[in-house]
Image (cartoon, rainbow, N blue to C red; front, side, top):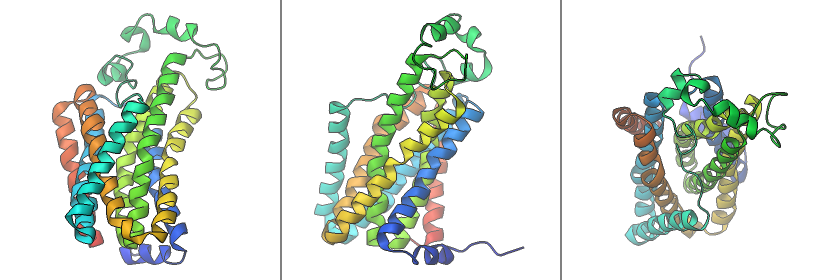
Length: 302
């Protein structure tokens, strides 16, 4: 049996390319999490415990990554002023974005008014006797999404698409964190990308689940989840291009990404996980996600 790939080998592979190409590659690795989550959604719907646990993992990763790595690194590089201003601007940016372009939140459409456990254990007719009629009422105009002759709940699919747009908006600043991290230190950028990849799995699940539930083809549901993750490479490349010329702004960019992540976690992830999932399993997921960041940080030597 061959020896496992060591972190030095991984870093060496990325060293063969230009910084901008490496930023793109790392952000693509991070965005793969949405594809994995989308695949999970079309294979099997999560119950309340699984949903709470997965969203908890996402929250734990984001909180620890923000405070333990991004803000802490910004503080060491640029001092308390850069870290504080960047963090505050990032949080205010997301608050303004939510106000100007409101989008559906996690959990708001996944279960369409029903608990995940109900959907996992009961047929549509048992959960909602009018569901079949509802799907037939809304099937016109959605043939491109569905299997031929299959009924589609266009309202639920449209809601799922809006949720995908919201997640894409989240992924853009997450890409900035990858780009800023790499421009500061390639190994730090790799660490951020690996942590965000785990975080993106529940996001991909949350994107594909309402589309699949609404009657969309599995391929389309998975494709939308993948596309929502591609906002991350866009943010990473933009950050790489900008910070390559303005190195002194790297501390502020790291703290900015941290502020964005903390806002998303407190405003959407944890409330959604507690409302639509199991409270105790959400807490367990937060702990597991935090431990993952601890172990990854130790392994990477960050």
